[in-house]
Length: 193
Image (cartoon, rainbow, N blue to C red; front, top):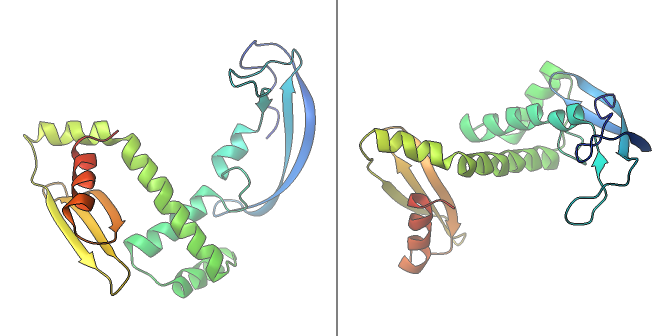
């Protein structure tokens, strides 16, 4: 995985080995393995505009798992889809992963993967907001269905939905259904940053 970083992306000059790391990784595709990663630095001591030295990490490993994480993106997606799209319980998801793939997750780790999935899905949603908006403009506009559901003492979940496309345009936890809490979310939906 470390053969890909042979020249500095800033100056195209040679690189030097800075350190070698071993990292435990678990993915659906590859199972559990130990990744050996060589971290390289520019031989000419290049730095980013922030002043940080240029470090070259394995791009292949970065595509499998987030930096510092043991569990890969494919496992995150599997857990997230099972929990949030198929509405399965933690124990069901854990049992399936153990039976099918031999991957044992704690309930806490399973919950962290499900939450990480939502963060990544939300980031992707906002990154693709211009394309989503363009598709809805091409539809000639869209109805915006708004619903807020309270959870006994746990605040309210506000959801904005396009029923024609069956797309959730936004979802947030808010403390109450007051206009000063709802209106900024509606504005964010129609004018994403």
